[in-house]
Image (cartoon, rainbow over all chains, first blue to last red; front, side):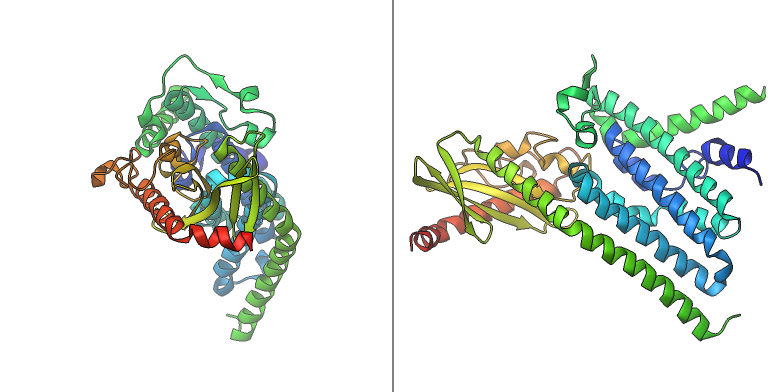
Length: 209
Length: 187
């Protein structure tokens, strides 16, 4: 196990969204704008890194009987903490994605990494693994946010002022195309995700040959 | 295999530490969060009315506000809510003039599905403006799917149905209680 391998696995070869297909519920539901995707992706990244850190720290102290309940408790704590902090500092955006922030606790990526990685490896690897898996998820969800907001609404960054301040017009980019409703709806999310998975597989094949 | 006591002791310790962290965060953020909620609500209140200089809003308590124009009472704003939505409670402000005509309504808080049910939010769509200038007799208070006059959303009927019903009940409530609010304020 080395840092390079952990990085490639998280970002590419074991990408939680494109390869392991975990955490699809928030990925599909929230990715209709860039800003929502960005915030949910970042919160997932932070929860994943923090929970991996703590779970790896106490891994020798837990056994088969206590491991799972302890992991879930730790993950749920970090999720609730992020939920409270979002309500404090980014209230507007929390109004949009609050439901899915709370649902991060059921994101299989988080428990999956805790159980299969953090509870077996030293802290520095566990933290890196959480960070890279989180980044892999973040990249995919933001990518979907871009495509869906651009095609579905014909604009980009329509909610960016909610996290960066200023007026909506400071950030909004109007694109020449009209909105295509299907892209904002769940079927659009499935289509885009399918295209991204196909693209990833195609690149892999292309590089191999 | 560890003893039962060992398991209980470990889980209790972790649970205790988690609870401690959560209570601390909850304690230090609760004022800011309730502030955010209140600001969010007040901003929406003013935007409902397109408030000009002549309009003032005075709290009557119980989440009820009196609208006065040039010092004369012209209507009320009050909170209505419904749990008939898709997920959790939807809370709204309803502004009504004395004759029972809707001046405006806005969602305060909701957890409807982003991209589907959240079109009741003014920042997502203009649907909620469809209530403006309507009264109990001016329109059929149901979504089109139920042979009424209100649009439903693409892919989401439950949310608009819940809101239409809530506003209708709010108007009926206002009709019955308006005089109580007026007199309790004057007293």
